[in-house]
Figure 1: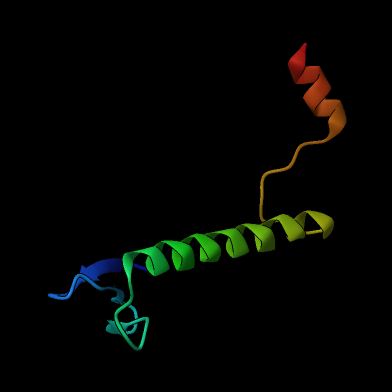
Figure 2: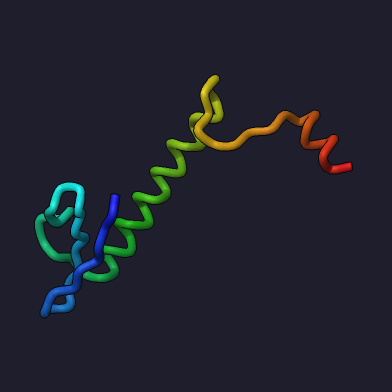
Length: 73
């Protein structure tokens, strides 16, 4: 999903999504808020990916212990 970071005249920020052709936030926000929100989103996405390791269909690359040890040699 292409996203564009947009700064307005008041030095506030928002993210424009070309998927919905609109801003993701109702209001423009401070740069500090933007950093926190984007980083939190990334952390949540990673957590969801990691949880799939506990299923029979992980979305991340996996390798058996045996194969790892063989490749290490």
